[in-house]
Length: 159
Ligand code: ZN
Image (cartoon, rainbow, N blue to C red; front, top):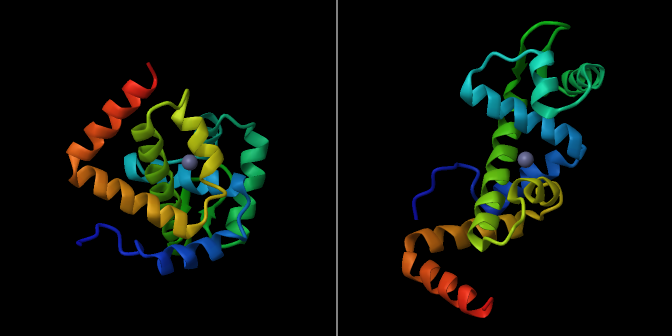
């Protein structure tokens, strides 16, 4: 099976997960958001980040200093925020992890708000579970008949 992501192995996930254990959920959210923003525009300052994450500017400054000190971002007060190589690697993993979980919740389809639930799950999921979900979603995408049968089964069950 071809894979789009180089780290897409349980081992790769484990390594990143171990590394991410030095990160709090909030730090993960920041790195994920900075990475996401880099994909879109690339120019990011702390006031923009504060809006995107809906956090007070002073908290953003504190967190950026923390991420700077742990080598994830390059940041000078009022300047642009850049991910270091370490930060980019981690951001990519966190972004990818988020997307897998959200895709899965969307597939299950009864989430009131799959986004906020993803935000809760993503920080606590084990690497092997993440790998299994990714594999499962690959399988579902390659077998649309299975997806349809599941949806029909579910609709019937809910009646
Ligand atoms: Zn997320």
